[in-house]
Image 1 (cartoon, helix red, strand yellow):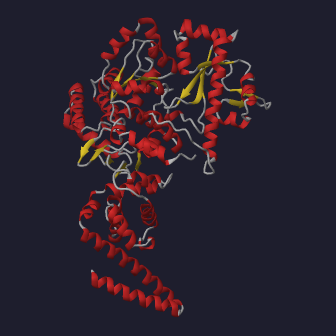
Image 2 (cartoon, one colour):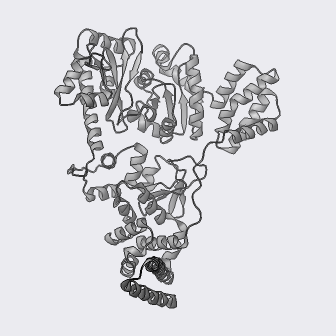
Image 3 (spheres, helix red, strand yellow):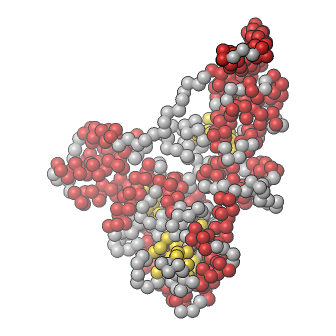
Amino acid sequence: MFIDEQYLEEIKSRIDLVEFISQYVDLKPAGRNFKGLCPFHEEKTPSFMVSREKGIFHCFGCGVGGNLFNFVMRMENLTFPEAVLFLADKCGVEIRSVQVGRGTTRSLEERERLYRLNEMLNRYYMRCLSSGKGEEENARTYLLAKRGIRPESWERFGIGFSPISGRDSMAFLLKEGFSGQEIIKAGVGVVTRGGELLDRFRGRITFAFHDIQGRIVGFAGRILDKGEPKYLNVSDTPIFSKGQYLYGLFATRDHLQKTRTAILVEGYMDFLALFEHGIRNCVASMGTSLTKDQAGLLKRYVDEVLIAYDADQAGQMATLRGMAILQEKGLTVRIVILPSPHDPDSFLRQEGQEKFLEILQKSPSLFEYQLELLLKSCGYNSLESKAKIIRGMFPFLVSIKDPIERTLKVASLARKIHVDESFVQHLLNEEEGAVRRETLPARETREHGILKAEKMLLRVMMESERWRHKIGESLEREHFSEPEHQRIFQALLGLGGEGGFLVSKLVDVFPGEEALHSLVTEIATREDLQEICQDDGAVESLIRRVRLAALERRILSLRRELSRAEDPIKLRELNKLYRERERLRRIG
């Protein structure tokens, strides 16, 4: 997909990189830059750097780096063209001439086809719900009378109905030009033993899944009468993965960011019930097994999560599993305790919004909830029961990142079950050592001298147009020892203009090459590479050093070749290189 560079620069000029990334990461000033905890890997000490001046970000912990578009691609799981359109919509840039060129990949074309297929099928389902007879009419009655979901919400969230025969919707898609293979790949069609293509959701109320941009990426279906399974989700497809998705987020994202609190429910009906009752800072996990990706998604928008799963035993166990995952992400977690046998949907319909909000206000913390469950289950009169309680609290205590908060929780637990605090802390330390999570491999801290010299020169070229020209006249591509350094050097020579967006433009020169994006942003943000930029004599010395190192590499190569066979031409070249080496040494 080809997008004119003028649109990229216009988008960058309208969106403040620091303000934008601050929607996802808590950034604090660090000299001329801003620093925070990296959103792409777990860390306790901030190593994620954002430079407003250069228009880039870089993490010195995991090495990820890039510009505004790269950040959006990673955070929102978008392709580059999708990220451009996403940002263009945010800042009001109208991209009129997006052309599909030779570089368009089959994967991108396939994804776009699946988006269109889902959109057209959703319109078909919605038409069936709004105007069909028989089962469709029963579905309308069920949604309106029994669940209190209004037609306005049908439209907003793409609620429809799949006819019971299962053939009509498939015939509709085939008529619209989609192949049977595409229908199956989208997860909406299944082939019977007799070879017939049928709708996966036939005879069910359908719920559209929207990505953060509002595009339809898949469906779920709920059966009207008795039968199993009650709910049926689309399987993972090229554009949808259940474990990376939260239902309703596209519609509630702004409310989450505004309140910094999310009410997490289990299913579509619970989510829709909250939304219908004017409670808009909510999302659904689409099942009881919360994943790390879903927890990370919540962390982008909120600081606190209120888990409102069902009050039955399965719901309680799911709540316990979800709590640890959320807490590991640094989120504050509280538990919404509804009276049995209610779920959020039934409670809201029976008791109303006001009483539900009262329960939210009284929601206990993760620690209080877990400890209360264990006390009810084990008691604490015997040594065995106390051991079970301490063991049961370990996963949650270990996941607390703040050492002060953890110490206070340990003290509270010890008082509650009448044991010595130091004993609990000792056991916790042992448990934490035994189950210590895998960490990122340590990055190399020592760097070969010539590699750092080359990086310093590239940094100077990024900072100064004057030096960019002078270094370009003094060095050739081959003077750099690493292919990546050679490519960055060559790209810098082709970039004009002084100032802030040079490095951001440099990232765009290497589309899809994450390793180069990381190297570019590392060079542009490392403090130990900055010191050379203000010292002309030091830059001249570095140029000589890089030239000398390149001569040494070439001399070594020629000597190896001549040791295998005599060659008068190569011998003359070697003698010439010797003289040049001596000259550079004398200058130095």
